[in-house]
Image (tube, rainbow, N blue to C red; front, side, top):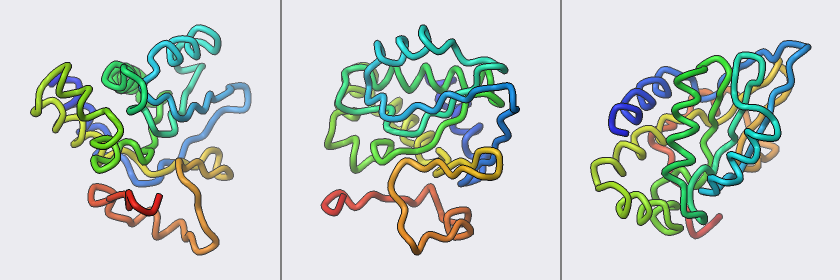
Length: 171
């Protein structure tokens, strides 16, 4: 687990805030959001849509953890798939991958119950480097949260994502 999380942080750190992907015309990308620690749901998606591969790309659009009892397993599975198929498995950050959120909604407690503080900190290190968004085929912007009329793509590209903190009281 330590090796997987360490390698994942390195992989994610090298990515830009907004990743751009080209989905070939004959390929269908599965975009999945809000698994929220439901490992059975993740496996159901894989059984019904196919496991990630070069011909079955996935974009997981945040909120891997909290609420369900298996955020650790869900996240480790997604990280392992991304390391196996880095050009076919993509991950965006959701608000639940932010420490102030998952410390309130269950992931911190789950991780400390299953592992220890050092493993929990390795998850956080990886989470801080998750991309904020993705652009598919130069035309579709995929982000976890809402956007407003003042969003400028360049500001999103340049935001210091490792310093991102959710305003828990405001949303």
